[in-house]
Image (cartoon, rainbow, N blue to C red):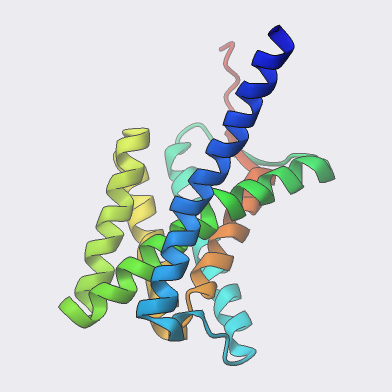
Amino acid sequence: MVWILFRRLSEMCFLATHLVFVFWFLIPLVAIAVLEPRLLLVRSLSTLMWVGLIWLLNACIHFAFKAFRLRGTGFKVGVEEVSARKLLLELKDQLYYIGLPEEFLTRGVMVGLAIPLIGTLEAVLFLSTMFGLVHFIHERRLSRFAETFITGAVYSLGLVFSGNVWVPAAAHVLVNLLFSCVKLSSNVSSDQ
């Protein structure tokens, strides 16, 4: 009896995971394909250049904000030893729940639809503000709002200049993978 209950519960969790994927990623993907299909096309190798540029800018922004939060204490950069399994699990999370779906929804659908309605600058500023507010509500730190507002603007500009939703999506996934391995921490120990 307990085994059957456990099995049913695990099946429900598995189903819930896939429902999240459907609502968080596949619906925005279909919306982009129907409303703005040009955003899904990779037209040239310059797309890789845009991914690299957006990734570098956002990695620098995240490092700067983390260093700012640790100011006065000094900080050190640590690289965690990450197993292949942990990295693959993080990649799965980024592709399934975080980086890829966030970019398809916020940049692909929202920015892609807002630009014709309110203009490029206004769409970038408005949706970067919304991106920042969502992260602020989750973490309740003003510096987190500023950090995600700026990175949201960079991701949006990556979409605008490249004309491709894969640019901010790939950059977002790669930045998050980087920060799953590299950590900034205070030089001041907690026992002082």
